[in-house]
Image (cartoon, rainbow, N blue to C red; front, side, top):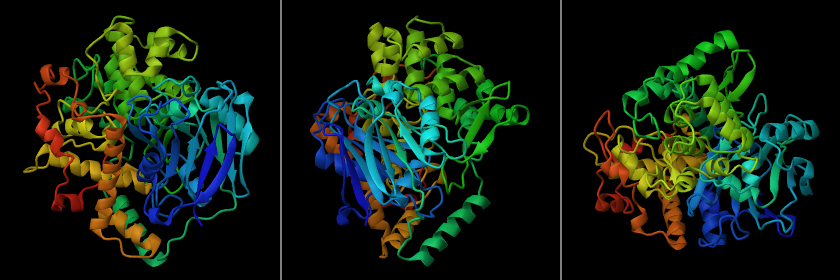
Amino acid sequence: MDKLLRVDMTTLTVTDEPFPSEWELQGGRGLSAKILNKEVDPKCDPLGAGNKVVLAPGVLSGSIAPTSGRMSVGGKSPLTGGIKEANSGGQAGQKLMRLGYRAIIVQGKATDAAKRYLLTVNKAGYALTEAPELKMLRTYACAELLRDRHGAKAAFVMVGPAGELGLSGASVGFTDEGKKNPARHAARGGLGAALGVKGLKAMVIDDDGTKARLPENMDTFKAQVQQMTKEHKEGPQIFKHGTSTTVPIANMLSTFPTRNRRMMQFEHAANLDGAVIVKNFETRGGGMHHCMTGCIVSCSNVVHGADGNYITSALEFETLALCGSNCEISDLDTVARMDRLCDELGLDTIETGGAIGMAMDCGALAFGDGAAALALMEKIDKGDPLAEAVGRGVVATAKHFGEARIPAVRGQGIPAWELRSLPATAITYATSAMGADHTAGLVIFTPPGKDAATASQEAQLVNALCDSSGFCKFQQPKIDEIRTLYGAHVGREVSFEEAADLGWNVLVDEWAFNTNAGFTAADDDVPEFCRTEAVPSNGMTVTATAEELQSVFTRRPISDELRTMRAVG
């Protein structure tokens, strides 16, 4: 029988409870939203005892479905003040589901703020123990200590110093397959801070002695898995080398932020192209790998320095853009080290790169000065006021300098994908409960004959369902594929309409939480400079009207495009 695992940090107790049968098709992001709406006061302090952090694998996690072990982390965001889900790869999602736990709910707050705790979960049960030796450890050191004590087969979940300090740019780190490094992060929204201030530093999830979750209808499930695997292997495999090779296309489309988004093309973009990373494999070592068991995409690049030693994994497009071009840093190795520092500290690379770009724009350090950027980052866990502002994100850094031009939506820094150059994506940023988050519904090209608001709504729906299923968006599943696997998993027919409803209702639940938190239609918008300050290379601004934005909240009929649309993020 599936269960929920509840960790109360106030009473320092752990209990399990039956998983509600009416939620059989709820997982990941959708399950997180259900729990938060049921149990959390939307007006609570995100860093207080009233907030809860939900770690939920997807419905299909722990099964043989390909690339389906993603983990959702949900809670009220310290960054946006609304509901937030951040999604990560790594091993924890698969293992937690194979242990029979559909989610871990972390509530309350340790009464002694100086103490740190460790949660262990395995086939024999669970335990919460004091772990003073983990306090303020950076994530790689924390993972190494946990490996020494609990073995390399277990998965580890942890916050870095940024999370312990309650910095609103903080992430939740997960160890990956292979080297077992904490290089995968549920990064957006500052949920690492919501978890870290509770006193729970890390989790050990060990599924030794368990097996993959079995569907009710193995024949149908296995046939769908084989078809998806075959189509992927015979397809274009656009993520063969990860997202880093997106750089030239993004630069061409004027969606490669440069100089704190005052430009959207970078003259040294070729230096940051993922093709350079791939070329370096020949002389430096490293290569491509998969971050979770069962992945068939293997999008994660393992980046080594000129000396042949490991630096980081994975160095993705968003990091190359925000920590690289946005700061006019063109040295690939410097950006790799910035990525590694973000992972070590437990910080979102998008938020941190945007904050450093803001500090550069305000004159605190020079654009292009990678050494100064690294030196500033090293101070984030050492009490430096400017470094701490950077750790709190774009809005906090802008306030530090009194700057009014702030590249953020709902308090969250804008990702690389530029809202002025991509009209439907602008609508996603404005209307998603998540704020500026490309994974909520990225639309690069609006289909001919379709308005941008409809394109955004459909992308948001498909991505919400994907985030609830456990699939990685780089697997690019369609609704029809997800509903077939869902049906085989639970042993009944799941129609296209029912699956689409599941995706839509995730959005409805998230919007409801934000409404109850105090957000209004006036908050469904983009920064004013995005309407008045044109992108220099294409002359574009955001032109979506209030009526267009509000129309996203009214569901459109199911279209032919929705039936064939794939998740993208």
